[in-house]
Amino acid sequence: MNSDFFKDKHVLVAGGAGFIGSHLISKLLLAGAKVRAADIKDKPQINDSRIEYVQCDLTRKEDCQKVVKGMDYVFMAAANTAGAAVMEHKPLVHVTPNVIMNGLMLESSHEAGVKKFLFISSNTVYPDLDTPMKEEDMKYGDVFYKYYFVAWMKQFSEVMCQMYAKGKSPMKTIIVRPANSYGPYSNFDPEMSHVIPALIRKVVERQNPLPVWGDGTDIKDFIYVEDLVEGMLLAMEKLETPDPVNLATGKQCTIKEILHDILEIDGYKDAKIEFDTSKPMMIKKRLISPEKAKAVLGFEAKTPLKDGLQKTISWYRSTL
Image (cartoon, rainbow, N blue to C red):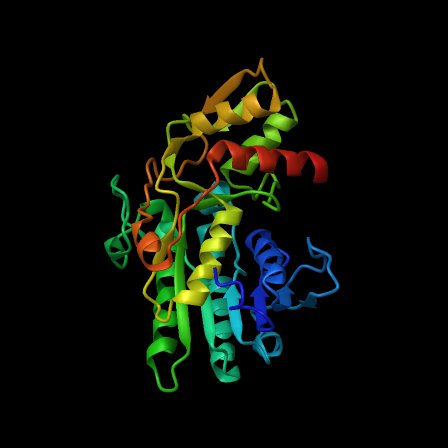
């Protein structure tokens, strides 16, 4: 990243009290940016007098207009998210609030003369194939059936980004498609957490038996959040069009392998593991190609999985 690109620039992090947003803010402050953070939550995870925090509801047009005013760059890290249980039983909760937020934030940013708008899409937009997904593999509507709602929402939001980039008085929009991210500030709530935070919580609590959803053979690409944020900053700096870019490690691992590492790192030696295939499971294998990000951004994820897990466990133990 060009150390001067964000210096003295006015940057909005929508979702600034959340997981990815909190890490973005830390990096932007180091880069000398003037940071505004917008979130529906009233308690930020990072307390720093240099940050202008605005509590707001981004499903309201007036709130969107207020937070984008005077901004050079917008990172759209605000989203209505949840884990596998919600995606299985209440998938529609992902649709309306996210489409409204994304649409209103794009509209308000365009009206305010924002220079660039970065949207965080998802690897759910890809079809159910077991080969590493390249950006051009995305086909509208061709998605894993359990991702139907969230994937269509992300695909439509990508189209909205393209609309604002190609219309009259275009606004530059950027689209990134991350691998599964994890790290400090993750949501460890039992009802809302994704797989790595959920496993860490169970191990730290020394649950015995230790329940694991599924059979543990699911294959995923997990990226440490600081690597992901580095890729996002590079994308904002270097990209000029809404041509999507994956941010991933290109490495695969199973849930069993992750659990083994967490148990080893935290010293839980006599855990009785109980795999529960009656619980909601998502796609069995999702591989993601990082080649385009390497070519156009010079980006490569640097944090080995075990190191990232160690940092996340240490943060969870010291903070929560």
